[in-house]
Image 1: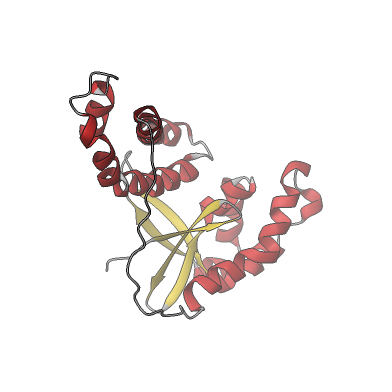
Image 2: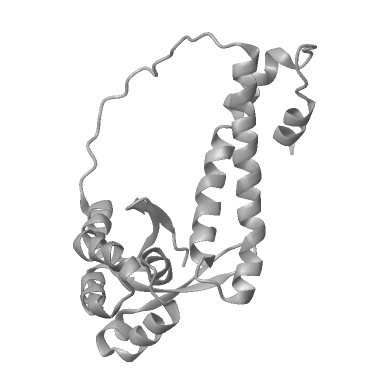
Length: 214
């Protein structure tokens, strides 16, 4: 069975969610990492709990370092799991984030899957006209190139982080996948920007063109 994994934003962080056999799930390790909780301790807690362990499923998520297995819970179990965490026993620096997740995490996931999407009549895409100097366009192109290089670095970090068991692994995988789509989607626009300057003598575009072509 193919599982269509979705990534949504909550509190400026990523949540991994998917639907399987009519049930909506969310991956637990990224939530623990977002909050700052020890994943190994929470994994053992889920496995010990009769209700949580019975509802848990394991999915395989592809990554640069190979397939990665994630323990997931139905989203309706999230509040039960969250409210079982004693804030007073947590490190002070994560308490505010934990409270935020207790208050709003389930609702964000529920809304994603259940809130009706308002359908609007299609409108012609708006077009805008601006004037830029060649230097200003060059800065935009290099901003894109920097984004691509940083995303490549995120991908290169996945395997080393997995090797040392870092709790940043899930977050890095999520950001790498999400932001890679962004720079690929904007590539046609960047190519359009550099087209008039391929033979420019005013500035050296060669390195930028090589990065874009990779």
